[in-house]
Length: 246
Length: 278
Image 1 (cartoon, one colour):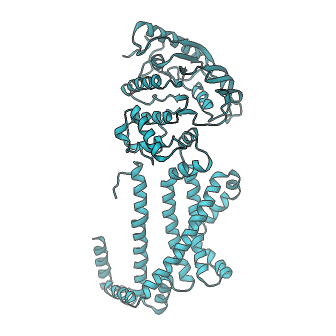
Image 2: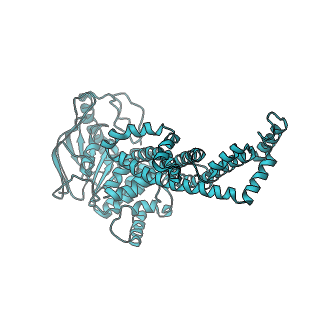
Image 3: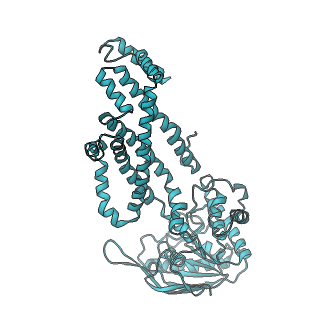
């Protein structure tokens, strides 16, 4: 419904002819580009290439971020020494790392993946750290009096107790990874949605640019709805933290 | 002799610099299979004393022995029930109880947990999550979980303080029944005089901060006890007089922070008729 309304507004805006049609193409032209892009497989190839980089980068960031976050939450020394550094690194947009990445890894996939990792990592570190630190002390005390210690305490109490906050972290770093990927691909190289967008710009093919934008937003929304939203609602419902249903 | 407190003191550091003495030189022995109640005004350090016994904190001087062994670390041999039901929100009621049973197969855990759940009359709620339970039911699950450790002692830190009158009375009965069935040693902390009279074999009266033992009262009386009868009212008055003296001596900010009647009532005038409510 909303989609229909937006498309109508879009079509009407095109009819007003504020910009010529090649700069602001109507919905029909964009749909045609999308269909032909899928038919000649150029768009699916780009999507797959992008998602592959994204997944590799995101998963690496998750693992590194979790380890670093847990270490920071557990070690006072570590937090006092590099806690501030991580906070300041988080404020640096990940694309700023691209020049360095290109020098280190060449104009390659690795450079883009590196940017994705950096983009998602700091948010992950900070949320994991706060999630672990925010575990209610009462639950920890109860578990300790029941004979739970060290690893067992961590996996059976700390981890499940911090899950709601961890999911927020997963979602946030996913969003950051997405943004970094696009920025990296726009300026970087190879196949991928970012490069298709760049080609569209260079050829003055605005319907291609809009097609890619639509794909990006749809993919982002779908993954959030199908994966993160479900995960979150599942966890929150079980604990009575939400009234929403799936 | 089950739990032995030997000249226990505990100080807490403050922001101002001078440490606050919460507990001063407490000697106490908790007799096996007895129901011992620590009764004192709010904030007097009685909960701290219990946490020390649980091994959640260490005393500054002295030591606590449990069957001859010092209590340095928390462990399942000294199960504790907290004022708030410390249930794990991601586990069902049954799983919460199974959590306390270690070192056996899952099937054994399950059947044992079911037994304890039956003891607190919550079999129908085995698969519910904690947030679906009322306060009283949550506290029942906590008790079942503490029982599931099969520890010899049960430490109870004002477990019924947050419950309504009726639920509290029910849980008193249940606790007494469980205690009689299992023969556990119970060390129970409360600020409610009526509660202590209803439950205890022995009441240890504690002073305002720093906590010191001011009196010990033995109650070799049959249960259930008619706590509204004249004998108990007199006892209650006597305890109250002791506590009042302590509180004014301690320069306490809120002279009415211990509950005279079952429900927290509005601060009554100091010379009232004990604010008894039946």
